[in-house]
Length: 533
Image (cartoon, rainbow, N blue to C red):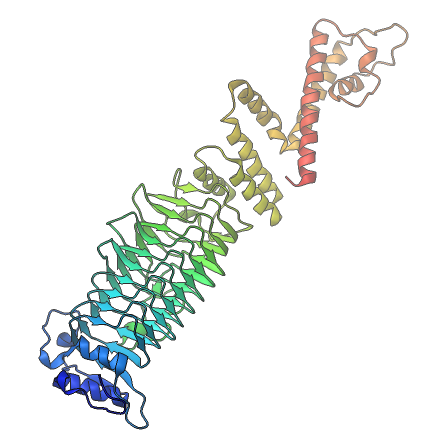
């Protein structure tokens, strides 16, 4: 241990030249650069061996962080180390680390152990790390891990990040449990940026809370070892979840500088992009997203038993604008959104979409999405008949003034329901559909009544029935007589005054029955219009 006010290292440490340079740079608040000037040999992810001139012991690094020397007068102590090979295990678990820490282009021989430690700001930039163990880590400022390669997973369970968490262009491989990033219960006060990240294993964010936005623009999540590539039920994002493309042209990452906030925006048209790709299932069940969930240009590669699960999510806007999944299922059961922005080419086909209980208010199609394709969209989501998706679509169309389309949707619902009925009911439904379209086209009923009126008038003009009582019948009028038979409620004082027989009796019976069916259907249709159903 160093004595208070003593800036020299303890003699028993026997510092190497690299460690002595690091020690002095710490006291000065400057950067200790151990690069040799050859980009290939300075690459921490390359195959070249690093000699003793670049090696610093994890024990010395831990001493600087936990109980370092006093800074030079007028300086602020900080550990800024570049191009070093840190040997043994860096373990500061439970420690209180006050200096600013930035390790850049470094190699770690063994895992980095930081559970329950407290940092102001911690930046590990472009480092090669066997494993990062940081459960319940607490930072007052940023935790940056851009361009790092982690061979056996990152653990950030229940960690608390005071500002931003950055994982841009990081490559993370799975641990023994098959997880690349274990961050259940993570809290990030501002942004979590994992843009153009590569994850090989399950990325777990169960119950995580992100204070602003979560960006996975241009990232590739791949988990051939398990069921899900992203497992994030009960995720809370105060603004937007971006699962979209990242621009490559003029990228901030084209230089060695690490920008504080990453790429930042969805690329504009014409920019060369790297799309978001998920190979494996994704679970966002019960998530809460303050602004939007954005899938624009996303690609999902799933097996038949895997899912893109959005059960019971709540968000003002869902932008489902990615590539159509060829296998697997998209589950929207119980989800609640205000605006649904989508493309017809983004949704899976029959059996690939489930949305029982899915509620939305406004449909905002991107590109050509006619009503016929929208009805196919509903049919694909209901392998077995369910009324809710049809009613939800009709309600959305009515809210935008498209009443005719809404009636077409409800008519399609009745036709779909008819397939589930017994034979007699099915035949009756076919008759209703053929004649009056279940009352959703009441004008057709009026046409049928006019046709039957004309047929009845023509028939009774040539075959008038005898009066019921001689001398008491009104003047014969085949027009009024036929109309009186057709209208079931209104009495024109014609039907009861005459006594048809033989064929005329059958013709009168047909007109009476048809009149009842058509009149009640017209009444039902008018009632639906008045109730806007």
